[in-house]
Amino acid sequence: MLAPEGYPIIGGTALLAVLLAAGAYYWLPGAWRVVGLLLAVLLLGFVLYFFRDPERHPPEGAEALLLAPADGKVVEIVDVDYEPVYLKGPARRLSIFLSPLDVHVNRVPADGVIELVRYIPGDYLVAWHPKASEKNERSEIGLRHPSGNRILFKQIAGVLARRIVFHLKEGDTVRAGQRFGIVRFGSRMDVIVPPHIRFEVKVGDRVRAGETVLGRLVAKPEAEAVGMDRLRNN
Image 1: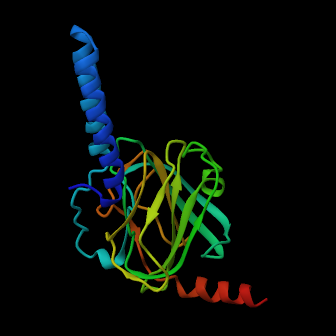
Image 2: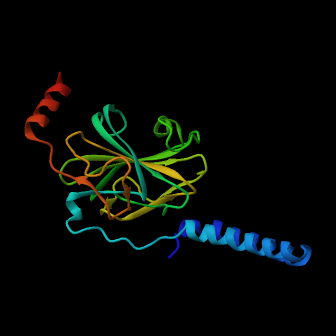
Image 3: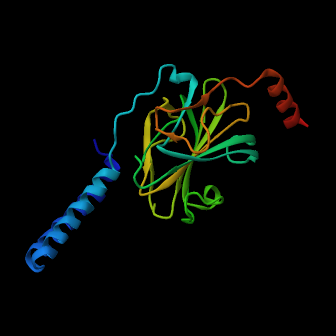
């Protein structure tokens, strides 16, 4: 199965591959003809491989889980003093790096209602750069889980990525593991949650979108909730 977002690129690459193969066949001598044909096949094969869209099956009880929104490697887990976009308070951030060889179809990390959607043009720093989350082209999507937890997830373009695609809008009701978009040719995904949510993966782990459990979406402890309300009101 191929991601529909890749159809225009696949079509253009197929045409280019045919032209390269024809040019190699008619204009290159001997062994160089074989090399040219092989390069055309490899080019088309890579693009088809990149836009693969395998079926994914969320684990049982996914309605109470935080799932990975992207395939890749966990490269950072940090506590944030203040998240200003959606949580508007202390938070915990997990970052996933997607290499060009990873599946790039993105999936919603949890059940809930979409309350924030925005696209921000920007730079194209390497995806693992500390400032990529703030400087690069990205989407920022805020989701409120039935437990009351707010979750912010970001598609972040990398040095090779030049196109972020997402199909969510404010007011949408979504399910954990639901397909929602893609970032083309290498990227990063950030997941930002309240500080009482504990991640069950560690830096260096590989995760699969829609299947790997990042954490459990428990309600905020009552004492902490009261304390935060008092702090906001002062």
